[in-house]
Length: 255
Ligand SMILES: [Zn+2]
Image (cartoon, rainbow, N blue to C red; front, side, top):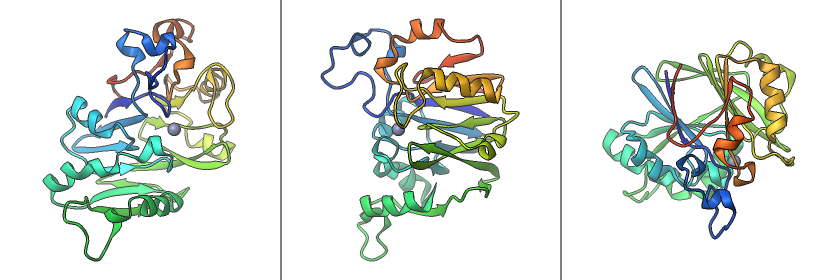
């Protein structure tokens, strides 16, 4: 299984438009972060988790040529605004692209991208999608790859993370129930969000993410959904435990 970090930034990305913050001005390529998403390949199956506003650029840079599904964590703009850009995959693959999400998220997408979900007189240039509702405690398949949803809380908003074999991807977490932590136990690689050092109402800060990693005890953990306020990649990495890494855009790992 291969995981490609397409984007590791928080909602505005890094650099932030118009910002003079030193991290936004950094020349280090690891300090440039697109909106958060991962591309996962298991044997012949290829899918992404989230499809934010940088999706087109991420597909071009990563060289992804096959999209078997899009799994959504939640409906916020930084995780969904690229949905229209699945068009090249839809045209080339000549079938609707499966999208998996909580019913609340599907309802939200239907409202915001009404033309994609139109059943009558649909514009021929619009992409086609096949809708699958994700329910907690119900595993599902993308081709023959088993996916386990994990419910986490983004402030008051329930959000899905996903377990695929020995890999768990969680983003936009602030709290998580004990029953959901059970689903993560024994994982080799954990990805979890860490926004910055200061606390935030709906995201783990660095210490909360490290405490969570200590609780779960994965072999390795990668931090994502990072704000420029976290600091320079190189300096933050030096402060982390030996099995914890700041993810960065275009990082590829094999599990
Ligand atoms: Zn987000």
